[in-house]
Image (tube, rainbow, N blue to C red):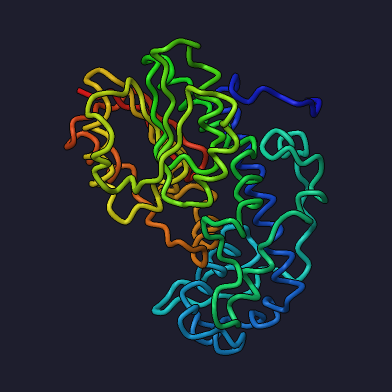
Length: 342
């Protein structure tokens, strides 16, 4: 396969997941390399419990659970082995682990990075290891101006953009009045506008809680009079929006940050007309896939806090609120759902 720029929207979910999981395999390798460089494996020559490992590493007490996630990520990759018991113990799997090789065409398809070396220099997992022994949270990525460049890069990564474009296609087919809940800096609004007729009936509305993201999304979409951005909390009723007005709505990449998702469902059901479409996309979930440990590690120190649901958490709550499931797929532990408002 030749590494050329692909229109990811046209890929089958299975193809994108294959590329995405190769990317996550590379991420595990980056964690392993950083663990070796930072001397993490030096504490694992003989079997140790998590408590013993944390003591030897000098882990800050309230970050001991994160140290456990690091060990589990290394177990998943094969650099550390878990010895079952109460409590379990951990030991380095091999001092001479052979170097991994990666399908760089798949890495490019998932990330737009043209080599593993380029990917290696763009990742920040080394910061997670350093954070274990540091008070505070140096790897947090809050939704503000200071972190806007980071979020804009992540939101345009092909594997992320793929899930968003699938949601855009689903809800844009429902009609010209569209809603993007937790719209972030506005990439989804632009993509929705591209699929919406240029007519007086067309409306593309974004709701976002971060004032810095509202400002960014407003600037990004200022050229299109059909697009508006309002500040609001999607876990609130949003009474300034008319019930049943929207043909389709989506929430992409934000569901797992909701402490009260039931309230968001109430809002979505109120705003989407009967027969309309609602997509919940790119949801960090508890599904036990290959990338579960590394994603749990990545988000353990990230702020705001995340609340990864299971599949049943999402689907059962949707059904209870009056949404029927039409389609779903996964990219590892990132889940995507399309519903119809009953």
